[in-house]
Structure formats: structure tokens, C-alpha cells
Length: 160
Image 1: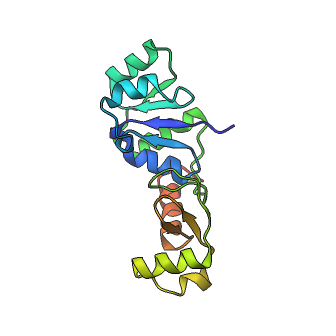
Image 2: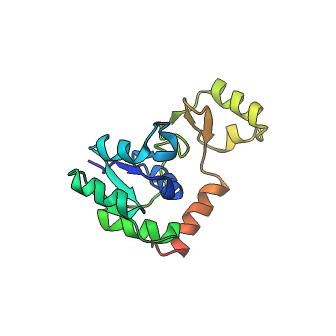
């Protein structure tokens, strides 16, 4: 079973990359709770808490929850650090990078609605396989942004 994560506010880009790679990842900035630190320490204990905050890390460990202190300030460095936990960074069409919802194949109607709303080229329907996030009402496909992600992974030494 793949590891699941919860990331503090300082790790938003890392949370996005984990989602892009198919990992079920909550992000503190999306939680809408009064005290994020206490919430992360005492909830979602089936997830590994990833944090840059030493005090939050200490509190989590003291409370008996699995936590990992991230030291790097760059997203590349952060990604390399969590690879020590067995994480493999490889883009997949599994989760919405914005909200973490599972993606599914887009219906023609959904695709046309998003294409019109977002003023996307209608050739997307013919050129790409499309995935859809029901919560965000967002489309995903393997276009130039996909190739850019793969290039970033290769150039940063994260993926061979």
C-alpha cells in the first residue's frame, strides 16, 4: 500500500508533486481548521506528517505519530528527502494536483464544458486522453506541461 501524507503550509509545492505522483496527500493550507498544528498532530494518523517546523515535528513525535522533518528549502531537495521514505516521483493521472480528489476519465460533455469555460483549444478532445476532477471541475491531459514535469524530474536528478 502506498504511503499517505499530510504536509504543513511550508510544503505546498511538495504536496503538489506528491499528488502528481499519485500519493494521497493532504495540505494544511486546504484544511480550513482553527489550529493547523494541533489538528495535524492529532488527526489523520494513518498519514506521515511532513513538516519543516522543528517544533511541530517534536510535538508530532511526542504524540506518537509518524513524522518526517524536511530540511531543504528547495522543492527538488524536499523531493529527494522524501524519496528516503520510498516515494517515487513519476507523474500519473490519479489525483487532482489542486485538491487531492481521485481523477476519472472525462465525459465528452464535461470536457466540452471545461474547454469552453477555460477557453482551451477544442483540438484537445481529439489529441489527448482527458481526465477530470469532479470537485475542481478541472481537466488534465498529457500535454507540454507533462513533458515539462518529466524534464524537471530528469534535470534535477530525481528520475533517471
